[in-house]
Length: 116
Image 1 (cartoon, rainbow, N blue to C red):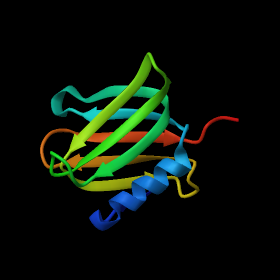
Image 2 (cartoon, one colour; image 1 turned 30 degrees about the vertical axis):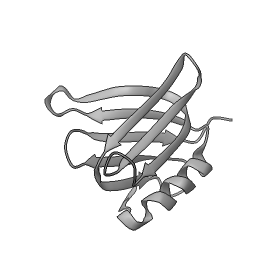
Image 3 (cartoon, helix red, strand yellow; image 1 turned 135 degrees about the vertical axis):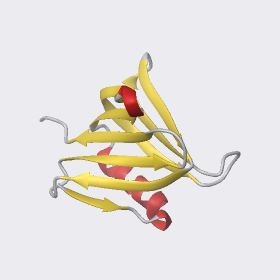
């Protein structure tokens, strides 16, 4: 796996492209909560999208949406991200996005190509 940090000037275009290219792919979303370990927020739900909002009432946020059933959707917000890193398997079929905020736990988005 190769890990790359995404420059903050590229966050909007990165998440737009990622969301378009990976819409519907199964994702697992976790928060790294220190001593208690990873807290799973979603498991193997279809990706709705990831967006970066640099304006509004908060300084900036990253929003992740997953799920295709109204009763089983997840929306997760990460406030004030400092670093965004991507680790993938070099052919794009699976990987992890790590969003490290200014305060609080990091969020991991694990993605994989859907089974055919």
